[in-house]
Length: 407
Ligand SMILES: Cc1cc2nc3c(=O)[nH]c(=O)nc-3n(C[C@H](O)[C@H](O)[C@H](O)COP(=O)(O)O)c2cc1C
Image 1 (cartoon, rainbow, N blue to C red):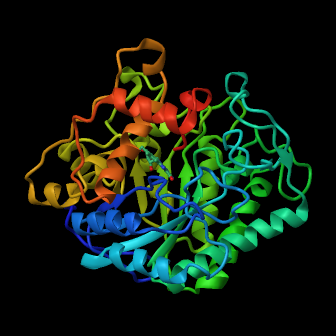
Image 2 (cartoon, rainbow, N blue to C red):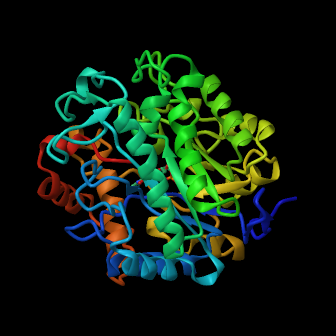
Image 3 (cartoon, rainbow, N blue to C red):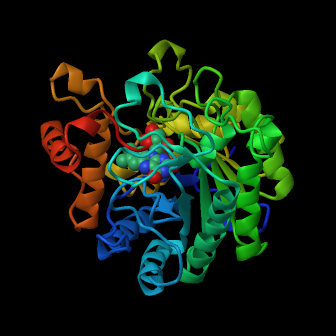
């Protein structure tokens, strides 16, 4: 029977000390030039001490012309190496594997953040989102090659700085996920059409990173089980990608789902009755694990010690992915291993104002504010007022983007 504290080995021989995986949460804590800060150093020290076997950073961008949010960390070259080294050294304490998540948002970026949004094809978001996002331009062949190279370059710098691994963000509707989706990728060249063509961009990114970091360095992928959109990325597509990633030598796969158009990753639009288990994508993961040599992590919805243990013991997942719970309880892995905490209660954050409570924005701002507290050396505050998060949100983003926030 697998226990939380059971160490295990990745296919490349890397030992992971336990079964907890702190999933990526965009911190928004870089400075105005998108460099890492002391705040990030403090935040990752707290998570490293908190006991997770693998801690993944929030998404780091490969191109400063393609930010997802104003305060993302960007790595294009080695100019911020010393700052990155401090970040890596704080997050690798306590025998923690610190992996950098690497991303390009493609067209999933709010108006005003980038000068020009790019995408595999010029396909608009579904109507209710069109006012928030710019219309994207189709990428040229040279630009596609440049982005592939950039992923490799960023990963190379992560390794030099002392991060133990990287994660390619291929989920949640960002650029790689746009390439994977039939709905968003209408290309007629080698990058579009069949799933073999749609996954070529991800394959090339994987190979570009592998060339830079060598064989012994873990590369993982965060992948949607599906995007839950009409004519979008399906579970069958996802299985094909998992199979191919295994052939290429991927070290670990994190399963999630959804995008801004249907944010299933945070449990939105899921009826309680359709949720058979507390984790949203566990049924898919149970199938994926059968065909994957690389360990499978499931992220989204885990809240009880029992639910997490069940998932491990029935081998529906090799690791338990945790995001929001780690913003409020940074030492949750230690507490679950010790048995001192049986569950976390994270009620949806409500203001009492109906139209606002329907949106995901407030909830995500609320969690970001917890990250800021940890980064400032304070303890998270479970009782933090959602109304404060609301005011903060409007102040930071304006009313227009209020309904949306990155995940
Ligand atoms: C504030 C916040 C920021 C997030 N940023 C990212 C991100 O940068 N990359 C990513 O893959 N997922 C991101 N996510 C999604 C989480 O990794 C995770 O998939 C989701 O929250 C569901 O897991 P949970 O129920 O344990 O929170 C973010 C979630 C939150 C709450």
